[in-house]
Image (cartoon, rainbow, N blue to C red; front, side, top):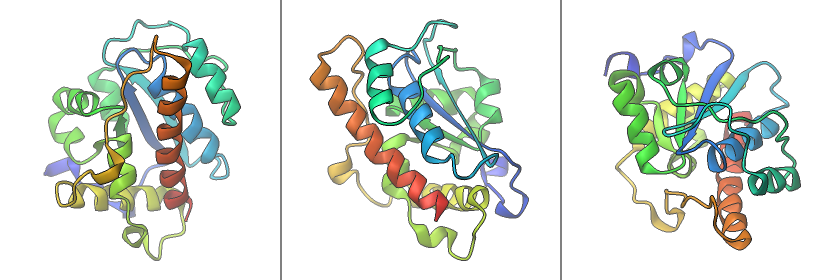
Length: 197
C-alpha cells in the first residue's frame, strides 16, 4: 500500500482532515465546522478543512446550512467553497466524503495516498473501534491509529442502519436539510469522541 499506511509513531501535527462534497456549500462545510468545534479542546492538534468536487471557489456557504450549523454550536463565519484538488487530498491524513462518489473522487486524484485515508464521513464513524487507539493519549496519534484501523476493517462489516451516503440537501426542504444535518452531527460526535478518547 505504500504511503497509504499511516505510521502513528511519526504523526505530524496538525493532523489534517479534509471533508468533501459536491459544491462545498452545505454538507462538507457543515461537517468541517462541526468537527472543528468538537475538536476544539485539542487545540493545535487538528486542522479541518473542506472542498467540493464541483465547487466554484469563493462561493459562500449555503444560508440554510449556515443557520443549522449555528444552531448546533458551529461557526459558519468566512466559510466559502473551494475546489477539490490532488494537492488538497495529498495534504490530508484523513479524507471524509459526504457520499461514496466524493470518497472515490479523492482516491482518483491521489490513488496511493487516498486509498487508506479516504472514507465517507458516516463510513468512518461506523468503522471506528476505540480499541485501535488503546494506550494512546495524544489526540493526533489516536486519530492516526483510528484511521489505520478503519482502513483495515473496511469491507468486513456492512453499512447496516448507518447508510453511509448523505443525500445532498442543497435546495431541498428545511426538513430534509435538518435530517441531513442530524446525520452529519451523529457521525461527527462519534468521530470526535473516539479521537479525544
